Structures are given as C-alpha cells and as structure tokens.
Image (cartoon, rainbow, N blue to C red; front, side, top):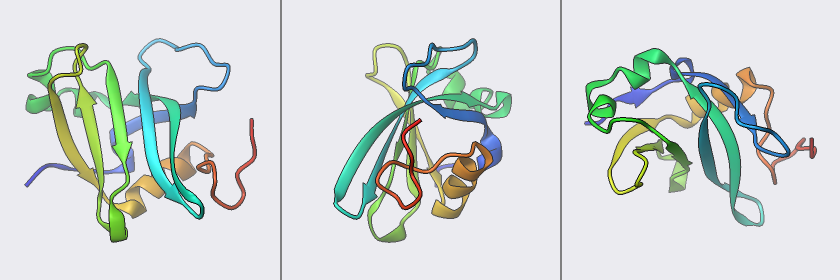
Length: 119
C-alpha cells in the first residue's frame, strides 16, 4: 500500500496566478470536481523535507512537477510526483480530509467551490 500523505507533508501551497516561482517551490496541478464538472488549476507547492527524503521520491532524482488528482466517490486523492521528463512518477494517497486541511492551512478555496474569489 502506498504511503498516505497528510497536510503536514507540505509546507505551502499557493495559486500560480501572476506569481513567479519562488525558491523551493514546485509547480503543482490540482484536478478536482466541482458542481459543474471537473477543473484543473495551477499552483506552487513546497513539499516538506521528509516527503522529498522518502526513498521512492529520492529514486526519481529531482522532482519537478506534482499532481493532486481527486478520485471519485470520496476515495483518497492520488498525489503524483514527477521527475523532469515526466516519464516516471511516485504515487501517494491523501484523504480528502487531509487535502482540505492543506487548503485551509494555506487559506485556499478551490475554484468552482462555494466561497472562491479570484485573487
């Protein structure tokens, strides 16, 4: 069974709108459901050192992309970390509760969800 991630496995998450990538940030995509369908949004994320030190992640070499992929029917999110060529990946699971906690810690609401306002 894959390692299960928590909100503590990420130091920050922020939307990419008009932002420049800061040191230690990795481009991330969140693919999620909302009332009218499915949406893909772009963010920057800083994984915790403990996540980057995971043996499977270390075997990728440098991680350059990350994908949070919502699964149907409340199943845990899949979190994919990719190496530069995006050919190899490591997949973890993250419960919806932990994913929502990650959003809350970073004062984010996903586009399409109640309360979202464009930055």
